[in-house]
Image 1 (cartoon, each protein chain N blue to C red):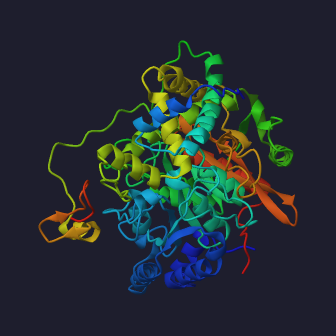
Image 2 (image 1 turned 30 degrees about the horizontal axis):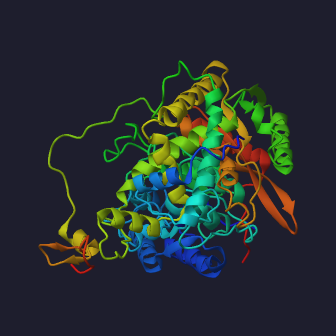
Image 3 (image 1 turned 45 degrees about the vertical axis):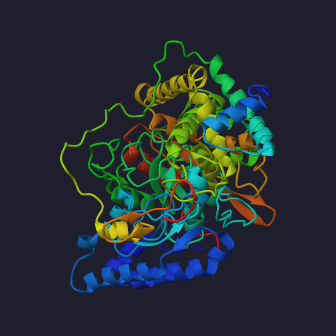
Length: 104
Length: 495
């Protein structure tokens, strides 16, 4: 297994975290950096494989996605919404504010 | 000890020898007695399960035949808690989904109930199905019924422990890189990952969409086949589900099996495998050889290359699938400080909501898909994936082998906490299982023997991987291996 402890710097991990919408602590950043370097270092074994003329395979089955008919279908029933919604008055759903406090 | 399996319970309910309620209560009693020490369940639906069982019994009393009710009439089952249920909660063992209730049930859950099964509870797992030990759960780790100081494997940790301890005769798991097969091996149960696309993923919370498949963990191949048949078949709600009828593997288990040829990759006897596992594997080959099975030594891409491809493809898909958990639409939402905006809301909610392993994989996936790195990592991994599939195809089509035989995991169950600080050590648990996942092939783990560990006995499994859509033949072969080994049906915890 390759030991490549310098594949990612701490600032690269912070940048990745921001792109991933994560905010690890300083202590977590160093641990994550070490872990990610270990996995990415291990992945270097793929560079030695004879892959030049190989087509990438994104899915294990060749069939293409099936499309639904463009027709109205069944949607959620009001009683289902009532069961799962934080607040439902029979017509409107109440949800917490996204920013600026927790009340509806 | 032995307890009745799926087929025995079904037959006994059908004949009136027992009732669905009696079987359900027996399962619930066992959960009550044993789960405190194992932590296999995230939720138990006692009242609902008894009511469903009463409905099955009422139909039987009214003169309806068990066949008309369904092939699993009165059988208690459990489902992994990353399968949506319109009853109870769907947690994925993550703080991120705290309080989340699904508006619908997964297709496989609906099909189990339509087949007459009684869902008694949902099982613990590694968070969002990411892990190979059952330790990465917001509900705490699941313990191995054969030795509670050890892990049951993962990510379908609770399903495997529940079946191995006899709390249920069968449970559904999901398998992305070995999450059904590896815990089955570590708990002495049978785990079956079907061909990709033969079972609907609708209502399975997505981890790696081109890899995820739902399948059964049971105490015999026969039971696994019966449950697989009940959950398989086309589903208009899942566009990756193949347009095929439900499988008929159970009825094919007694088909003649002559001239069986198994491929054994050179790495199946590699020195990196624990010697006790190599010993069991060798004994398994000898037992099969005495039954007339022929072996063919074959070459596959190295385990290192398979593992590297998997730990690029799966995190790439995970980072995309888990982007939906943003603190706004699902579960956990962080408290914000003055001046925090939307970016802080996302970052804080996701950091508080996801555990370490999930965050690690999201970061890894983001990196390998990133502009400037995708060719180096992601595209290269997809090319390796093609090579793996081609090599498997050659083994089946050109060499004419029925299945590939390997150990399922490189060692028996390990002690809780012994690999938590070293992700690569944990990822190596998947070294034999990721190949079938990347190639979309059916694969089953079957108990092959036990190894002594102190005053305990720990199970060891072998894995059979078959050609795409060869699920029926593969399970037939698995039954032969199960019979040659003679370890099926054992329950770990007495009482």
